[in-house]
Length: 314
Length: 249
Ligand SMILES: Cc1cc2nc3c(=O)[nH]c(=O)nc-3n(C[C@H](O)[C@H](O)[C@H](O)COP(=O)(O)OP(=O)(O)OC[C@H]3O[C@@H](n4cnc5c(N)ncnc54)[C@H](O)[C@@H]3O)c2cc1C
Ligand SMILES: Nc1ncnc2c1ncn2[C@@H]1O[C@H](COP(=O)(O)O)[C@@H](O)[C@H]1O
Image (cartoon, rainbow over all chains, first blue to last red; front, top):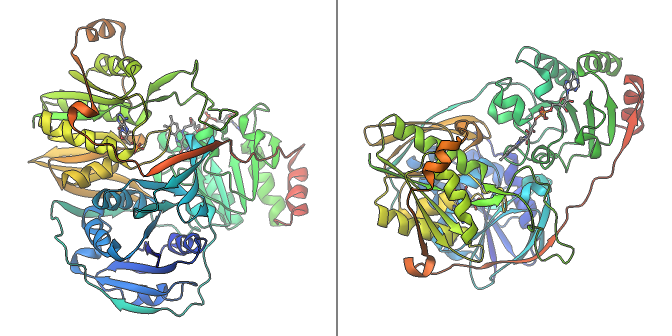
């Protein structure tokens, strides 16, 4: 019998939306049982939440004092140990999953399939390469364990009406002490999370300064949107790194994406191609962003944004 | 600290618009500009800065690739690396094989720190550094945007989805680079001349005794589903109307 283990991502309080997306992906394999592993210090409420993920068989609760922080070096040997009973181990292609899963794969002696965007068979997948300029179909050896990350933007979260059972497990393995968590510097924000927001407003180099970027925040707030940015805007220090959208930042799939003063480099576009509608505002009619935009307007963002805000408010 | 090992992968230059071959067997590489993977340039720059601060004695760059990868290794030497190793391979190797190669090189070179890119921009795998750290049974600090070394430890700031995460790792360790770690230096002409005299050693996976690990086979390359070009509107009124027509507002 084939079985999939999905590694849950969370912040100690609630599950990250990537977990429900991984479960959705797992659900597109055929004839497999899906279990979800939750690693934390006290996973009671997280496991209650995980048990509701539609389509899973059970939740593995892995409580241990060392599991308080998301450290790949600490989690990987435990995941590898639990993997013994499974044919497939899936994690999200968020920074958490990208850090952890290859370490698990190496401990299991297998290569990893990164960024599954489509499951063609239990060992055959499609994944983007070259910043999304090509899509590669890969076939994994069906005699080996499959370790993979799931491109979360390709999947909708599964329903949460399930009633799976929870089982406590304690993998027996040596946990290294060579890696220590210090802190997470996060900017507190009430805005919708970039990776799950249905509306996203992004700004590029054209904003020119952190002060001007307020225009983007202000417009985003007026329509209840999350905020993103191009690499150029992050590099220039207008906004923090966690707002970067693209090949090497966040891959997102909002219903509507506004790109203000973003040229549309391939590395940026790969992060937004699953967006429902792309709106581009750029003063250069030749900007490549217009090749992918659903609605484009050639204009100065400093004039367009205030006018747009006013009109959408009425 | 003694020695830093840096990975240098030869990839299609990031400015090239990559195209899939009509028969789906790969992407077009004929006549296409090849460069050092941008994240590996950042890795090398970081190693050089560590050495220039007096915190390392030698920077060795290594690549697994075809003979022509010498070009990228010469560029790395011109940037300031002391020595280069080319592990000659006609075919692309998997991340796990690359990790096994780096492990052998660590043993051979007695490296104390390995800096790789967070991902190679061809396959976008983002695996090799993490795999190497696992095989080596040493710490990994991936997606680094700041690295500080002291007392046999590295304090690394990591670019994660939630913001900036700081971890402390004992050395030896593997660090993988993110975009904001540094800005790589430009190579100057005299350095290119000097680099010609720097040692570039060649070996192979067979010579190193590394068995290849496959298990994930490339079947078919396809161009991505294209997004069709949409409508251009004249002004903000047109934009608002288009949004309303689509039921988005
Ligand atoms: C390895 C690698 C990885 C990368 N990863 C990413 C990534 O993940 N995400 C990402 O975004 N980039 C990434 N990049 C960078 C990418 O190649 C581009 O450099 C970047 O996206 C450009 O940002 P931009 O569009 O804001 O700036 P620019 O390209 O400078 O474009 C600014 C645009 O603003 C327009 N403009 C100027 N003034 C106004 C105005 N007043 N009103 C309206 N429009 C105006 C201009 O016409 C121009 O089109 C990566 C690059 C490399 C090499
Ligand atoms: N063939 C190779 N030669 C040199 N370095 C490599 C090679 N493959 C991977 N690497 C290193 O590993 C990093 C991550 O690669 P990947 O896991 O393929 O995305 C790269 O940025 C390089 O530093």
